[in-house]
Length: 190
Image 1 (cartoon, rainbow, N blue to C red):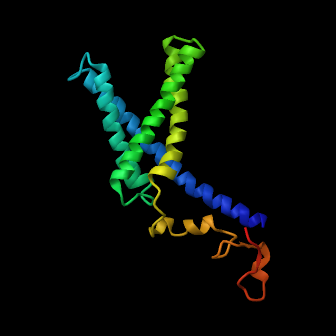
Image 2 (image 1 turned 90 degrees about the horizontal axis):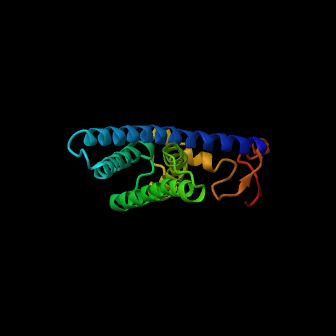
Image 3 (image 1 turned 180 degrees about the vertical axis):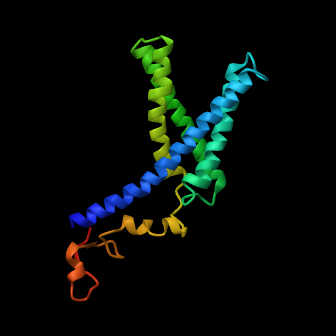
């Protein structure tokens, strides 16, 4: 039983790790897109309108992130209803932004740290980390929720989720390979 659970855990961690790495790569690229556009707009077309420049840069980075996550990170989970998926993506991004803003609010009004460094760390380090963790799980479980498809890379991922169980969801003992029928015996419903 322990070896089956161990194998199942390793398989699930492997699946999750692939998504985490892709998600991190997309996030880093979106950060570069956001920062690059923001700096470009502030030094050119929107000089003096930093807030508007940040909104435009953030909107472009959000669209980039949605496309990259949809077609690369979670390509095996994308939904047929693209409009719903995009709306959920925007809502989850707004919540992630709210998490970062809440970190700044707590730092400024509760902890009463008002220097630029403290506020930057609160919003752009702590808020970014907490918001990113939220976004990953939100995207995985609420935005990109379709079942795994038949791509060869993901062909055995369903099996990982059900390792140690038969086709009816019942637990199968570790020593089932030695069972005379070769099919395994069920020990108990789980």
